[in-house]
Amino acid sequence: MDYEAKAREAVKAFWQSREAAKQKQRDSGRSDQGERAGVTGGKNMDGFIELTEALIRANGLADAEIHRERAALTLPGFFRPTKLWDLLVVHRGELIAAIELKSQVGPSFGNNFNNRTEEAIGTAHDLWTAYREGAFGKQPRPFVSWLMMVEDAPKSRSPVATDSPHFPVFEAFNGASYLQRYDLLCQKLVQEGLYTTATLITSARDAADTGAYTELSELSALKTFVTSLAGHVAAAAVRLG
Image 1 (tube, rainbow, N blue to C red):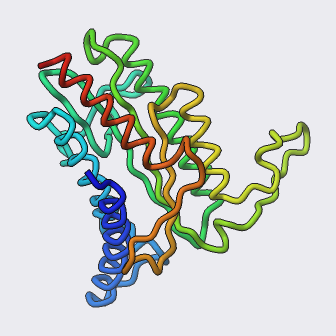
Image 2: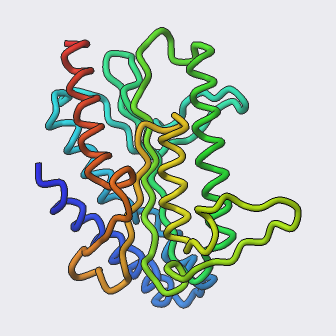
């Protein structure tokens, strides 16, 4: 599967979907708050869902239940009753994969970065604790992934100051831009075992026609997500028959 071509199509769809949602707001005579009009459309990351679904079908689980509708995306939690995911894959009663798909565009990156970070960490910790306590039955560890698309813009690329009056922050964060902070987050989420993969894709607004995107590191690259998921799915297909 040419995942890079599908990724470019997903990026184009992302920007086009945001613009279509904003245009719909304008045409209806209703105004939304800043960039919120592009967020409330709700279909921005569908291209990445379609890429993931094609990858699963191509690697041995053509008959798997791939859930993308809200009514079928809930998993039990440990610290809370349930958690709504963006994509779930179930085969023969076994949870194969749970995937979160997030995005962020400017002009505000600071508060949103902190919120995304806390959400990503909490979601993974809740799921793995529920898994340990038998919420999904006796089964191998599922593939759990976090994929983030962030606007490539001057404010996301510019160095950001840190303020910690009592103790120094880790050196890697000093002068790091929000894009670099997201990349560090992805790497740490994987290194700490919270996610099987954590992916960062960056793209400028003018990529609506080309689908151009960039990656910041090998560990957070889309290829790592693709190859890891393909291997997990192929192994599950052999094991479950």
